Image 1 (cartoon, rainbow, N blue to C red):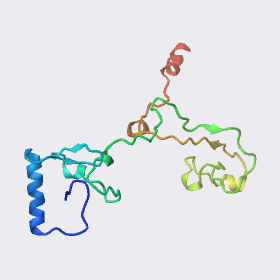
Image 2 (tube, rainbow, N blue to C red; image 1 turned 45 degrees about the vertical axis):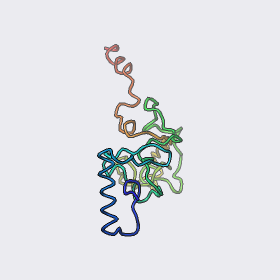
Image 3 (cartoon, rainbow, N blue to C red; image 1 turned 180 degrees about the vertical axis):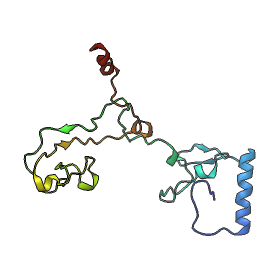
Image 4 (cartoon, rainbow, N blue to C red; image 1 turned 90 degrees about the vertical axis):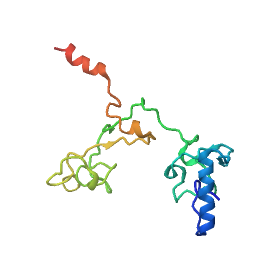
Length: 165
């Protein structure tokens, strides 16, 4: 019985708990063989428990570090790929459409999520200056790519400013 891979629903007796702690100490000392996961890989006994234990919502069934590994099937978008932020799709509608943002008239968000300046009388009531819908792309990015402030930045565009002077 191991506490590295999963938690047990029953409480351990004092003797079982003692045996378990002795086994963990023997594994750390190298006198007992290391615990193995489902795929036959050894689990390092010096890994801290908070890393080795799977979260409660993952039912692993046995000792494993699979929850720490990168999933093979997941395909993430490359960080170099530029995605359109704040780009409008096509021409704007000519009149207010039901279900659109009451402030600007775009169909891609609601009034609560509108980033435009709140109007005194929104597009729903005036029917004027209705904004085009934003392009929303479904992109799967990793942690770093999600927070990349310079995504889509082209330094040659900045150089054109100085060439014009």
